[in-house]
Image 1 (cartoon, each protein chain N blue to C red):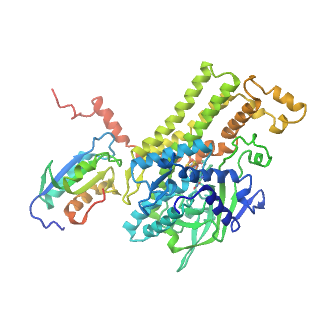
Image 2: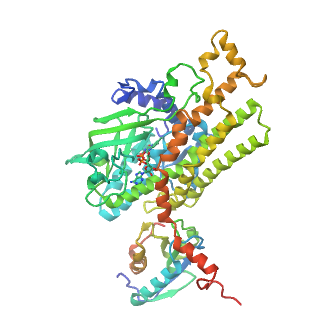
Image 3: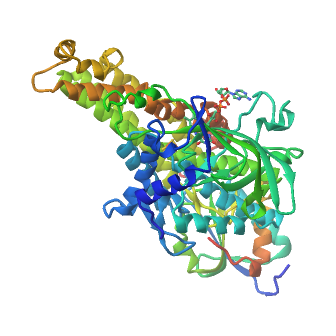
Length: 111
Length: 492
Ligand SMILES: Cc1cc2nc3c(=O)[nH]c(=O)nc-3n(C[C@H](O)[C@H](O)[C@H](O)COP(=O)(O)OP(=O)(O)OC[C@H]3O[C@@H](n4cnc5c(N)ncnc54)[C@H](O)[C@@H]3O)c2cc1C
Ligand code: SF4
């Protein structure tokens, strides 16, 4: 884990509108927060964040990322079963997201 | 030179044609560029070059390449946004309108976009360098404005058996030898649209493969004139009309499609042109993405051809004096409704497209499958309505030569006329166009290709079953009728 910074990670969670989800967005976020409890202190915020976790129900990911990108150092985009444009098996979604949050120095993203 | 002129494209084919083994009607074709059966398909492809030259079509036909910074033909371009995906559909509709047939260049564009993002993800997992090889090849394609034929469908042998179980391993194209400098492949790709009027062939596997089937998991590109390639030109309904010398009975005076049996008889491919070799775990991705892009394409090209068919029905209604009848008007409205529904599907799967890890955009796969599923049906209904309005004369009318023979010709004209204001030849041409679109050469593309091209109807239904979340829908219903607790309603 590259989480050298001791202060809690400021995490902004942004959902899509949820018209036709192929994943359970709320449950996924709960699982991610649960999983982070063990490794990483987190402070949820709606303002400027270290990481923005954008949770979209389907691959279309219609959330306007431009509005979020300027208010976060890193952006993780969940779009149905894709994370940062890579397909991830359903049972590994929360693990991969936690890993990306913990290793954020390595995930300059291409969203 | 980034945007080739149509004449330069035809000159390219002429220069290549001496090195290419093409067979038709049991004979080797020496000069296929000027062959009257083949030439209409070259004309249709040439239109993709011609429109790219014209300022009034430039916005749809061209775009600035992210690979080279040059303006390139959209048929060689990597879609960079949902807007690009929409423009692709509009471009295909435009070309369908201009040619009234399958203009053939889209299969390659769809294969290029699918391979661009699949090779990227394959490299990320397997540490291979397919994506860089592919990019290098694609830059050449863009710089020279080349036409690429996308090849997926194998001969397939016994449909109940997978490639590894076939009694003849060549039923699916496969690698027969790996060398230090490249691979040798053998097999046959059937039904290849726009083959001998392309510059390059881009080959992909036909279906999802399992470990143990590595030799069939192969993607590569070769120029058309590669040694070992044999091309056998497919027949189309009414094809020999083109040899009769007239210009009425062929229906479409200028354009047509082309499908070719493409045989790879121990063909060598150097490594820098190999983009998958053994990665069975990425065969599903390439098949789904190529098919997805191509299922989107039909929401444009078939609609453009449909516009011609609607125009043909309207003209015949006018010429034959039934245009004011409410039943006829209503049938034309129904034709338009069906045609625009297909267009709506093409636009929808584009508007809902998404960025891939490689950066280019992919359509919404579910909606692209819905689009193609409708394409397997609606053109048949549009054609049925068109034939209904046309009456039966388009299948019983004498040959154009009979209209010009002494004495009898005058009688043929007399009994073919509808109104004194409509010259007989006008009606004759329009009836032949109806025949061409719904039973003749163009019906290959407008009807049977709508059924089977980019996968038979069942292939889309399998995808729809996989992609629709039925449990989610069941839960919605259960919450509404009280079978399940509904936490959304939390107010007094
Ligand atoms: C005009 C035209 C142009 C084309 N252009 C191209 C092109 O440019 N490039 C390209 O790669 N391909 C092209 N195709 C090929 C097209 O994708 C195939 O025709 C299509 O995938 C169907 O394959 P098939 O013709 O072998 O039919 P089959 O696969 O034999 O299908 C016939 C029927 O059998 C059913 N069936 C098949 N297998 C099974 C099974 N295992 N279990 C149950 N049912 C089964 C099908 O659902 C269908 O109803 C073109 C086809 C046409 C008609
Ligand atoms: S069927 Fe349509 S999408 Fe396919 S090659 Fe022909 S015109 Fe293009």
